[in-house]
Amino acid sequence: MWFSRARSDPSGLAVPAVSASVVDLTTDDPSENRIHRMLDELGVPWAVPLRELPTRFGVTRHPVYDWDVIAPPLPKLTLPGMLFPLSTNAFRLAAPSPADFFSTVVSVADDPRINVEAAVEFFSAWLGEAAIEASGGFAFCAEWTAGPASVSLQASGPHPYCTPEPSEADRREPRLRRACSVVIEPGFRPALSVLEREQLESSRLLLRLDDDAAPRSLDDLRRRRPSVTNAPFAREPDDSCRRLLGGLHVSADGRTLVVCRDQLLVIPRERVTAVRVSKLTRARGPAGSWLDLICVDEASDDGLSAVTVLEKSRTDQLDGRARSLGATLGVPVDIRPAQQNA
Image 1: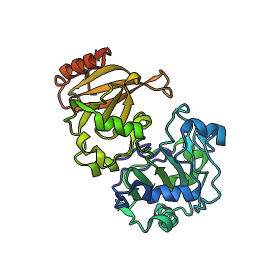
Image 2 (image 1 turned 180 degrees about the vertical axis):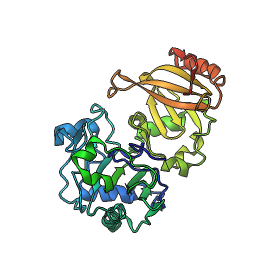
Image 3 (image 1 turned 90 degrees about the horizontal axis):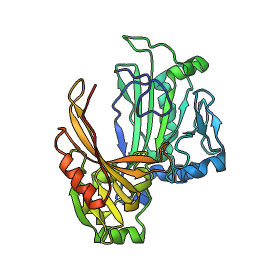
Image 4 (image 1 turned 45 degrees about the vertical axis):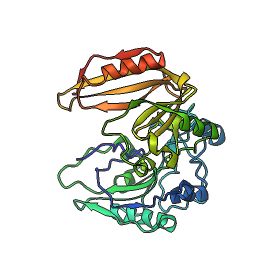
């Protein structure tokens, strides 16, 4: 399927969905993460809170795309054929967590495979060789992962069955049509503090998170990348988290919630303002429901964000759990009417 803008590609390039032969560099020791070490050597501020980046590096208009970016000076990033500097979007600028991605594009020839090869050659000096996956003879990609971090490369040539209209960005910079998108997602998660570790060790179970998104193992949890809204609460999981897998816990002093679902989240109870259930009935898409903790979020437009803790495939499975959880936490419960999944 052709996408005008791939969800996993913040650079904005029009690239098809291609399954890469991923090089997995994950180790048991997060301090040995090779992607993080590469970013440190290149000077990429991957662990700096997003709210500090504008002061350090300023905010500029992207030279091709119609949005604001933060582009730190990176003299050691000698990636050949970069059409513009590596940058992150100037979005959620009050966030205490670091940027969730950095991106650029590479063009050394009017050939998508050659452009991917050029990027692979550069990154292989730090990360080792990566195979280039081809799809239909016109789309190419490669990827490295290390725990929650990834470096993804994608490029495409003329589609054999359709010719999408050029975007405004393509008209400004025609080389984008065959360029290689470079997206680096650091997946930053700080280690547990001494106090947080004590709270985890003393915590008791409030709610079993028995949905498909619950982690099957600690290794599975280590590899998952936090979402933008989860990131302020996300922590690096370690062996002490095994008993927490698939559960929502509360610390002995009642001040902290610990969610161990697709991430290890440590949420101050005072940040939780409500419990919400949203529902979709089957239409073009499947039916389902999900339970969110509504949390204070200083970086969002309305000061709130939703942290999903449980999902079900039916619309009638979460109301009781939400009411019970809301009563335990002493917060309002918002059970919303079902909407069609159009």
